[in-house]
Image (cartoon, rainbow, N blue to C red; front, side):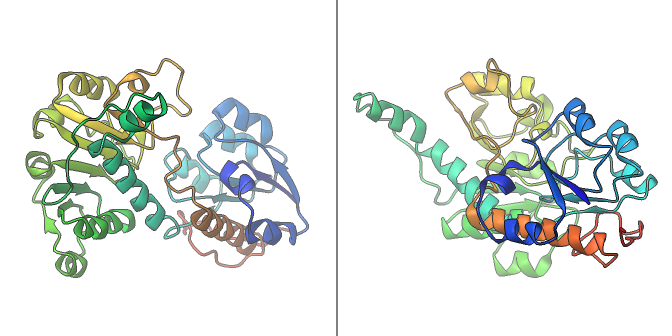
Length: 325
Protein backbone atom coordinates (compact mmCIF):
# COMPACT_ATOMS: atom_id res chain seq x y z
CA UNK A 1 0.00 0.00 0.00
CA UNK A 2 1.19 3.50 -0.83
CA UNK A 3 0.03 6.42 1.30
CA UNK A 4 0.53 10.08 0.38
CA UNK A 5 1.06 12.40 3.37
CA UNK A 6 1.19 16.15 2.73
CA UNK A 7 0.36 17.95 5.96
CA UNK A 8 3.48 19.61 7.31
CA UNK A 9 2.41 19.91 10.93
CA UNK A 10 1.85 16.14 11.00
CA UNK A 11 5.36 15.60 9.63
CA UNK A 12 7.11 18.23 11.75
CA UNK A 13 5.58 17.40 15.14
CA UNK A 14 6.87 14.35 17.03
CA UNK A 15 4.32 12.08 18.62
CA UNK A 16 2.52 8.76 18.69
CA UNK A 17 0.89 9.42 15.30
CA UNK A 18 4.19 8.64 13.56
CA UNK A 19 4.45 5.26 15.28
CA UNK A 20 0.83 4.47 14.50
CA UNK A 21 1.35 5.13 10.80
CA UNK A 22 4.68 3.29 10.70
CA UNK A 23 3.15 0.19 12.30
CA UNK A 24 0.89 -0.28 9.29
CA UNK A 25 3.86 -1.26 7.16
CA UNK A 26 2.57 0.89 4.32
CA UNK A 27 4.92 2.86 2.11
CA UNK A 28 4.64 6.53 3.03
CA UNK A 29 5.23 9.17 0.36
CA UNK A 30 5.61 12.67 1.76
CA UNK A 31 5.30 16.14 0.28
CA UNK A 32 5.23 19.61 1.82
CA UNK A 33 1.70 20.97 1.53
CA UNK A 34 -0.56 22.74 1.10
CA UNK A 35 -0.26 21.77 -2.55
CA UNK A 36 -1.83 23.51 -5.52
CA UNK A 37 -3.69 21.54 -8.17
CA UNK A 38 -0.64 20.98 -10.37
CA UNK A 39 1.50 19.68 -7.51
CA UNK A 40 -1.26 17.43 -6.27
CA UNK A 41 -1.82 16.05 -9.76
CA UNK A 42 1.84 15.14 -10.00
CA UNK A 43 1.65 12.94 -6.89
CA UNK A 44 -1.63 11.07 -7.23
CA UNK A 45 -2.46 8.19 -9.55
CA UNK A 46 -0.41 5.54 -7.80
CA UNK A 47 -1.43 5.98 -4.15
CA UNK A 48 -3.98 3.90 -2.26
CA UNK A 49 -4.57 6.32 0.61
CA UNK A 50 -4.06 10.02 1.13
CA UNK A 51 -3.71 12.04 4.36
CA UNK A 52 -4.17 15.62 3.23
CA UNK A 53 -4.14 19.07 4.74
CA UNK A 54 -5.38 22.02 2.72
CA UNK A 55 -4.27 20.74 -0.68
CA UNK A 56 -6.31 21.60 -3.76
CA UNK A 57 -8.09 18.30 -4.39
CA UNK A 58 -10.18 19.16 -7.42
CA UNK A 59 -12.22 16.98 -9.72
CA UNK A 60 -9.25 16.83 -12.06
CA UNK A 61 -7.08 15.51 -9.22
CA UNK A 62 -9.67 12.92 -8.22
CA UNK A 63 -10.09 11.75 -11.81
CA UNK A 64 -6.39 10.97 -11.96
CA UNK A 65 -6.30 9.52 -8.43
CA UNK A 66 -9.08 7.00 -9.04
CA UNK A 67 -9.60 4.14 -9.18
CA UNK A 68 -6.31 3.56 -7.33
CA UNK A 69 -7.16 5.96 -4.47
CA UNK A 70 -9.41 4.16 -2.02
CA UNK A 71 -9.50 6.51 0.98
CA UNK A 72 -8.99 10.25 1.50
CA UNK A 73 -8.35 11.19 5.12
CA UNK A 74 -8.47 14.91 5.90
CA UNK A 75 -6.18 16.12 8.66
CA UNK A 76 -8.50 18.70 10.21
CA UNK A 77 -12.11 19.70 9.71
CA UNK A 78 -12.30 22.09 6.75
CA UNK A 79 -13.02 20.37 3.43
CA UNK A 80 -13.62 23.48 1.28
CA UNK A 81 -10.47 22.74 -0.75
CA UNK A 82 -11.80 19.27 -1.62
CA UNK A 83 -14.37 18.47 -4.32
CA UNK A 84 -16.66 16.52 -2.01
CA UNK A 85 -19.21 15.85 -4.74
CA UNK A 86 -16.58 14.20 -6.94
CA UNK A 87 -15.27 12.14 -4.02
CA UNK A 88 -18.76 10.76 -3.58
CA UNK A 89 -19.23 10.20 -7.30
CA UNK A 90 -15.99 8.24 -7.55
CA UNK A 91 -16.80 6.22 -4.42
CA UNK A 92 -13.94 7.60 -2.33
CA UNK A 93 -14.71 7.83 1.40
CA UNK A 94 -13.74 11.29 2.65
CA UNK A 95 -12.83 11.25 6.33
CA UNK A 96 -12.20 14.15 8.71
CA UNK A 97 -11.30 14.86 12.34
CA UNK A 98 -13.95 16.93 14.17
CA UNK A 99 -13.46 17.97 17.76
CA UNK A 100 -9.67 17.99 17.81
CA UNK A 101 -8.65 21.66 17.57
CA UNK A 102 -11.39 23.84 19.06
CA UNK A 103 -9.46 24.67 22.22
CA UNK A 104 -6.32 25.64 20.33
CA UNK A 105 -8.08 27.79 17.73
CA UNK A 106 -10.11 29.58 20.39
CA UNK A 107 -6.92 30.40 22.28
CA UNK A 108 -5.38 31.72 19.07
CA UNK A 109 -8.40 33.94 18.51
CA UNK A 110 -7.82 35.48 21.94
CA UNK A 111 -4.15 35.96 21.06
CA UNK A 112 -5.05 37.96 17.95
CA UNK A 113 -7.55 40.08 19.84
CA UNK A 114 -5.13 40.88 22.65
CA UNK A 115 -2.36 41.66 20.17
CA UNK A 116 -4.59 44.23 18.48
CA UNK A 117 -6.05 45.84 21.60
CA UNK A 118 -2.71 46.03 23.43
CA UNK A 119 -0.68 47.14 20.35
CA UNK A 120 1.58 44.15 20.88
CA UNK A 121 3.49 44.30 17.59
CA UNK A 122 4.15 48.02 17.85
CA UNK A 123 5.43 47.70 21.41
CA UNK A 124 7.64 44.67 20.80
CA UNK A 125 9.11 46.22 17.64
CA UNK A 126 9.75 49.49 19.46
CA UNK A 127 11.42 47.81 22.40
CA UNK A 128 13.65 45.65 20.21
CA UNK A 129 14.72 48.78 18.32
CA UNK A 130 15.58 50.51 21.62
CA UNK A 131 12.77 52.97 20.99
CA UNK A 132 10.66 52.51 24.13
CA UNK A 133 7.67 54.06 22.34
CA UNK A 134 4.27 53.48 23.89
CA UNK A 135 0.66 53.57 22.76
CA UNK A 136 -2.44 53.40 24.93
CA UNK A 137 -4.43 50.22 24.42
CA UNK A 138 -7.88 49.05 25.44
CA UNK A 139 -9.36 46.61 27.94
CA UNK A 140 -11.51 43.71 26.81
CA UNK A 141 -13.75 44.13 29.86
CA UNK A 142 -17.37 45.03 29.06
CA UNK A 143 -16.82 44.87 25.30
CA UNK A 144 -19.32 43.04 23.10
CA UNK A 145 -17.93 40.26 20.93
CA UNK A 146 -20.06 39.00 18.07
CA UNK A 147 -19.35 35.38 17.21
CA UNK A 148 -20.44 34.27 13.76
CA UNK A 149 -20.64 30.49 13.88
CA UNK A 150 -21.27 28.99 17.30
CA UNK A 151 -19.95 25.51 16.68
CA UNK A 152 -17.20 23.89 18.72
CA UNK A 153 -14.68 26.69 18.17
CA UNK A 154 -17.19 29.51 18.49
CA UNK A 155 -18.40 28.08 21.79
CA UNK A 156 -14.86 27.95 23.16
CA UNK A 157 -14.36 31.58 22.14
CA UNK A 158 -17.57 32.50 23.99
CA UNK A 159 -16.35 30.75 27.15
CA UNK A 160 -13.07 32.66 27.05
CA UNK A 161 -14.87 35.90 26.27
CA UNK A 162 -16.91 35.51 29.44
CA UNK A 163 -13.71 34.90 31.41
CA UNK A 164 -12.39 38.25 30.14
CA UNK A 165 -15.62 39.96 31.18
CA UNK A 166 -16.91 40.43 27.65
CA UNK A 167 -20.50 40.14 26.47
CA UNK A 168 -20.78 37.46 23.77
CA UNK A 169 -23.54 37.56 21.18
CA UNK A 170 -23.75 34.76 18.67
CA UNK A 171 -25.28 33.93 15.32
CA UNK A 172 -25.70 30.39 14.06
CA UNK A 173 -28.42 28.54 12.18
CA UNK A 174 -28.11 25.66 14.66
CA UNK A 175 -28.53 27.18 18.12
CA UNK A 176 -27.57 25.40 21.33
CA UNK A 177 -29.95 26.88 23.90
CA UNK A 178 -28.46 24.96 26.82
CA UNK A 179 -24.95 26.23 26.07
CA UNK A 180 -26.14 29.79 25.48
CA UNK A 181 -27.99 29.86 28.80
CA UNK A 182 -25.06 28.37 30.70
CA UNK A 183 -22.59 30.96 29.39
CA UNK A 184 -24.98 33.88 28.97
CA UNK A 185 -24.56 34.12 25.20
CA UNK A 186 -27.20 36.30 23.59
CA UNK A 187 -28.70 35.03 20.36
CA UNK A 188 -28.62 37.55 17.52
CA UNK A 189 -31.73 37.61 15.38
CA UNK A 190 -29.64 38.34 12.29
CA UNK A 191 -26.13 39.05 11.10
CA UNK A 192 -27.09 42.72 10.92
CA UNK A 193 -27.60 42.68 14.68
CA UNK A 194 -24.10 41.24 15.14
CA UNK A 195 -22.68 43.95 12.89
CA UNK A 196 -24.53 46.75 14.68
CA UNK A 197 -23.67 46.00 18.31
CA UNK A 198 -20.26 44.31 18.29
CA UNK A 199 -16.97 45.90 19.31
CA UNK A 200 -15.27 42.74 18.06
CA UNK A 201 -16.46 40.32 15.39
CA UNK A 202 -15.00 36.81 15.39
CA UNK A 203 -15.52 34.52 12.38
CA UNK A 204 -15.97 30.80 13.00
CA UNK A 205 -18.13 29.64 10.14
CA UNK A 206 -17.40 27.24 7.31
CA UNK A 207 -16.56 28.56 3.86
CA UNK A 208 -19.64 28.05 1.70
CA UNK A 209 -21.12 29.93 -1.27
CA UNK A 210 -23.24 31.81 1.29
CA UNK A 211 -20.34 32.82 3.53
CA UNK A 212 -17.80 33.67 0.81
CA UNK A 213 -17.17 37.47 0.96
CA UNK A 214 -19.55 37.71 3.93
CA UNK A 215 -17.44 40.58 5.24
CA UNK A 216 -17.61 43.15 2.46
CA UNK A 217 -18.23 46.86 1.95
CA UNK A 218 -21.95 46.50 2.62
CA UNK A 219 -21.60 44.55 5.85
CA UNK A 220 -18.67 46.66 7.06
CA UNK A 221 -20.77 49.81 6.65
CA UNK A 222 -23.24 48.35 9.17
CA UNK A 223 -20.53 47.86 11.82
CA UNK A 224 -19.40 50.17 14.59
CA UNK A 225 -16.64 52.51 13.53
CA UNK A 226 -13.33 51.07 14.72
CA UNK A 227 -14.60 47.49 15.01
CA UNK A 228 -11.97 44.77 15.27
CA UNK A 229 -12.46 41.71 13.04
CA UNK A 230 -10.92 38.34 13.91
CA UNK A 231 -10.64 35.51 11.41
CA UNK A 232 -9.54 32.01 12.37
CA UNK A 233 -11.86 30.41 9.82
CA UNK A 234 -11.11 30.95 6.13
CA UNK A 235 -9.58 33.91 4.32
CA UNK A 236 -12.20 33.88 1.59
CA UNK A 237 -14.96 34.80 4.05
CA UNK A 238 -13.55 38.34 3.87
CA UNK A 239 -13.54 40.44 0.69
CA UNK A 240 -9.95 41.64 0.86
CA UNK A 241 -10.23 44.80 -1.26
CA UNK A 242 -13.19 46.06 0.77
CA UNK A 243 -11.47 45.23 4.05
CA UNK A 244 -8.29 47.06 3.08
CA UNK A 245 -10.28 50.20 2.24
CA UNK A 246 -12.04 49.99 5.62
CA UNK A 247 -8.77 49.46 7.50
CA UNK A 248 -7.27 52.52 5.81
CA UNK A 249 -10.32 54.69 6.50
CA UNK A 250 -10.61 53.62 10.14
CA UNK A 251 -14.07 52.11 9.74
CA UNK A 252 -12.38 48.84 10.74
CA UNK A 253 -9.91 49.49 13.52
CA UNK A 254 -7.93 46.30 13.10
CA UNK A 255 -7.89 42.85 11.55
CA UNK A 256 -6.46 39.84 13.33
CA UNK A 257 -6.26 36.83 11.05
CA UNK A 258 -4.71 33.40 10.85
CA UNK A 259 -5.92 32.84 7.30
CA UNK A 260 -5.65 34.59 3.95
CA UNK A 261 -7.33 34.38 0.57
CA UNK A 262 -4.04 33.04 -0.81
CA UNK A 263 -1.74 30.84 1.26
CA UNK A 264 1.12 31.39 1.40
CA UNK A 265 0.63 35.01 0.29
CA UNK A 266 2.64 36.83 -2.32
CA UNK A 267 5.32 39.12 -0.79
CA UNK A 268 3.36 42.18 -1.90
CA UNK A 269 0.02 41.06 -0.42
CA UNK A 270 -1.56 44.39 0.62
CA UNK A 271 -2.81 43.19 4.01
CA UNK A 272 0.71 42.45 5.20
CA UNK A 273 1.78 46.09 4.91
CA UNK A 274 -0.93 47.63 7.09
CA UNK A 275 -0.02 48.58 10.68
CA UNK A 276 -3.46 47.65 12.05
CA UNK A 277 -3.26 44.04 10.84
CA UNK A 278 -1.94 41.10 12.83
CA UNK A 279 -1.50 38.09 10.57
CA UNK A 280 -0.20 34.64 11.51
CA UNK A 281 0.60 31.85 8.98
CA UNK A 282 -2.40 29.53 9.52
CA UNK A 283 -1.07 28.15 12.79
CA UNK A 284 -4.21 28.50 14.90
CA UNK A 285 -4.45 24.73 15.32
CA UNK A 286 -0.72 24.09 15.38
CA UNK A 287 0.03 23.28 18.97
CA UNK A 288 1.68 20.05 20.01
CA UNK A 289 -1.46 18.84 21.76
CA UNK A 290 -3.75 19.63 18.85
CA UNK A 291 -1.43 18.26 16.16
CA UNK A 292 -1.11 14.92 17.94
CA UNK A 293 -4.89 14.71 18.34
CA UNK A 294 -5.57 15.60 14.70
CA UNK A 295 -2.83 13.40 13.28
CA UNK A 296 -3.75 10.40 15.40
CA UNK A 297 -7.40 10.74 14.42
CA UNK A 298 -6.49 11.09 10.72
CA UNK A 299 -4.34 7.95 10.85
CA UNK A 300 -6.95 5.96 12.77
CA UNK A 301 -9.59 7.03 10.25
CA UNK A 302 -7.38 5.85 7.41
CA UNK A 303 -6.57 2.51 9.03
CA UNK A 304 -10.20 1.78 9.85
CA UNK A 305 -11.44 2.61 6.36
CA UNK A 306 -8.64 0.73 4.61
CA UNK A 307 -9.63 -2.31 6.68
CA UNK A 308 -13.28 -1.93 5.74
CA UNK A 309 -14.33 -0.74 9.19
CA UNK A 310 -16.41 2.32 10.08
CA UNK A 311 -14.15 5.40 10.49
CA UNK A 312 -14.42 7.88 13.34
CA UNK A 313 -15.97 10.56 11.11
CA UNK A 314 -16.89 10.65 7.43
CA UNK A 315 -18.01 13.62 5.35
CA UNK A 316 -19.83 11.43 2.80
CA UNK A 317 -21.21 8.52 4.83
CA UNK A 318 -23.28 7.40 1.86
CA UNK A 319 -20.06 6.06 0.33
CA UNK A 320 -19.37 2.58 1.73
CA UNK A 321 -15.92 1.76 3.08
CA UNK A 322 -14.43 -1.41 1.68
CA UNK A 323 -11.45 -3.41 2.80
CA UNK A 324 -8.48 -2.67 0.56
CA UNK A 325 -6.57 -5.75 -0.50
